[in-house]
Image 1 (cartoon, helix red, strand yellow):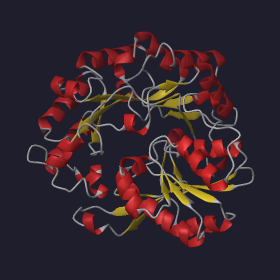
Image 2 (tube, rainbow, N blue to C red):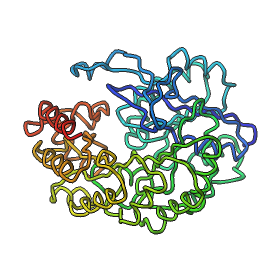
Image 3 (cartoon, rainbow, N blue to C red):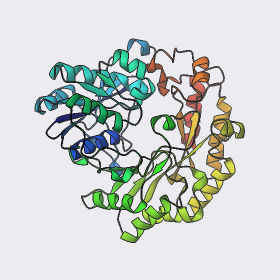
Length: 439
């Protein structure tokens, strides 16, 4: 594979709203590092790394935004629809700067963000006629049939793609990789090729892959196999490596960061503390509150965790059990107590609450908001997006007024896809206000 040219592309987001909450194409950058390790020449066009970044504190920021026409199916939504990321002119300038690649890898995120994927592939194929385009990522995995039929990509890869990608390229190029991937040895991977990002304000860390939970609203177990963990010391080495190159803010991308925390999270935090690294950690993915012991809460505080997000989802015991049994209200309340005793203020403890689930009553969400407010946390509404192949999918299809199974655009949580008389848009607005009143 020596000398083969590979172009990585992270497409735009087309949506009613989008924010950079430590969002980078980490999987794509890992693939780039793997290909570079095997002798490929790798380039990156990250459409979300716009030509007009609007930075905020701790590495967050607003994406560049350009209002565009809404898809016909979404015309009834009374909000502006926009393309988030670099301008189209900037994208074409970057394509013009890239030496003709032997293959293009395009990633995808939310299922309903596919318009940006299609747009990127269309322009890539117009510039690099005949160059194969391989599409992977979340949309490609969860809506593989839709992607195969409409995306324009030459190949669709579902789920963890390292082995399939290498086999595909080996068949195309007739050369086997010198360093084949080992999906079970996460520490054998080269560090993500962050050097290809044009403007890097933060780093993203993955300490494990997969999730043992089977929450009915989540696709984590569909995107990766069983839970596999890295060596805590090697995770600390990676954080120290990027910190030594100027990064202070790091976001954990794990789906199960705190599970069996005594064997992974706690040793990592102890290493960070012992090395005296001046870093700030962020957890945009929900943490499993039942594992936040008094000791772990103090370690998190001492190591530099400043963005805490807990996944309560609901305070209703029956729904807690039916959606995966990952937390009880008592466990959540104890976690908040532990965090407060470790020195966190209530405003530091964000708590995700799912709203708009199939046949969910607005009153259930309001009860959860009141619970979070009562214990001193900060409630954050997480509008439900129906995800194909998950446990709640069939219920969502039955409950939704939209044809979810035929059109991924209707998965967009802005629509409240499972809105009904027990949970209307007006009720949702009242719940949003109740969350603001608590801040």
